[in-house]
Length: 339
Image (cartoon, rainbow, N blue to C red; front, top):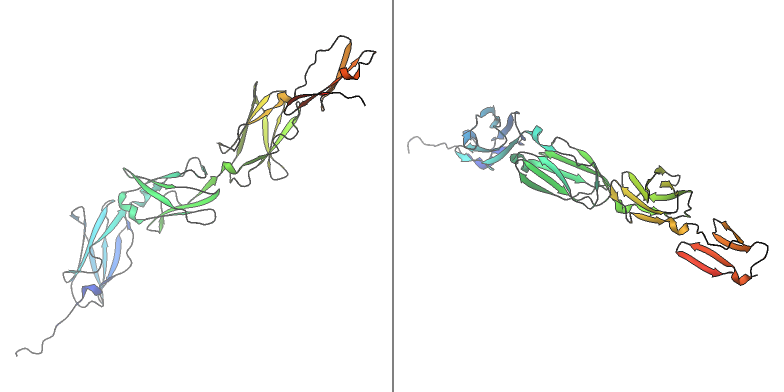
């Protein structure tokens, strides 16, 4: 047989490999390498298209079957990359590459900065749709637990990251493009509070008309924030003060100016605490005026609020004397007994 022996060269496109692919970022050259050193001899071809248009591509042979591919992304959209070796697609070809303008991916911080627990939080984000698949969203709770979220598309490049803070404390929130580049506004720390954890204690500890009254509030388990107090009586607002006490509690103080009904509104970061508004009825502690005969005098021991009647010059029979007591649960009358 003439021209014998024959020499054949074989190739296998399945043995062509790709080095690590970069992120598709606008205005930055997209550059990667194709490794064909184990695939045999042959011709390498690379094409890039987006929305039916071909993108100029550079293919440089580096030797030993290695090639470097470079092109520029054309807009925030999906690009189709095809790599053929001797006319046959290599593994993963064709493939899609998303390009995005990272500077235009933005996450807005929550308003207000302190967020309530057990209420869904909607974090607003703007992004090109082509970038969404390459975004990595991470939310870590106060004990470094992963917090689940839902990404919702509202159209016109607007998205929301919806999640639920369950415990008061600091949450670490971050969005990265390709798990490498933090987007605008990230990372951020978000403080959550729980007004239901506020405990109001010593509300009615010996209230006395004409004296300053103290209410103690425990916010140690409620998270970060501010306590606001508004106290009203029949004449309007009663001036009050909130200070840090020596027992690590918040002390609310105000003057019980007169026998009246006091409404006490207590809120934590604008959220009412359990039981608010509290009511303090100082009318029940009001001194009563008793109609007496003209020949009778009386005196009152205010703290105990006993009223003794005594005749001028002549003592009344003991069964005509009455001890008058005002208690927290209304007026009670008891017959006086002689000793």
